[in-house]
Length: 288
Image: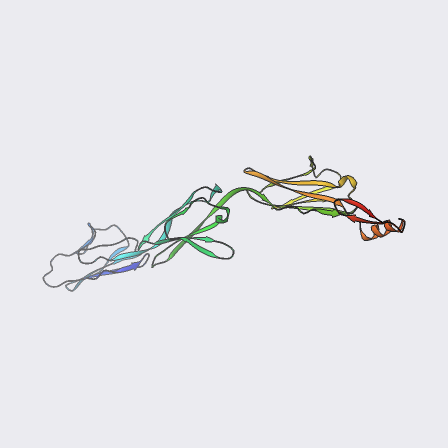
């Protein structure tokens, strides 16, 4: 009899042809007797006798779960892959060495692959149950998908790799604002874990509770709003982004800037032989 392969959960029928010379027959699963003639030795309810006569000795096994072997035939069950060991969500610092494990069983033995999932692509990064990432960078953070597959089916599971790194902050842009107007200062920082923001004017900490001040922090951005700015409001402002791995800062200069109406009104009150004009950051310069 040829080998027989069935999928897990299916039914297999084992038929043994016999002639007049056969006096005793039995079906065995490895060394365990399933049937000896009409006598059922197996306690497994899935095994039953189909036919026993001079021509054949046939049994049936339902809901196949394991391999069955006999002296003359070796039927086997194909088993769907199942991932049995997967590295759980992991958090490491940038520059660390990372090893992710995904092991699976099944029959035939499943092939294991790792992919890094992103918004734009799904990149295969390993064809082995071990995924090694030396000196990991923040660009390697994300969802990793392990796939175990064989001829029967596929099992898929995912794990998250989180990379901690200190803040990096965008360079601030100086801002010209007329007296009495509103100044909006923006500060953006990338980090993991998320950074906390602090604002300073010169060396003095600024808080939300202060009059004419509003600070809004949303995700990776902090916004400082100065309402009805006065001469005292001009100067150097510093944004600091902080997490447990470090800090970064950037400075923004807020300086006076006249509106067109204010400049025209100011010039109309001056002698015609004198022209004044604004040079942002350095004040008023006269020319005759």
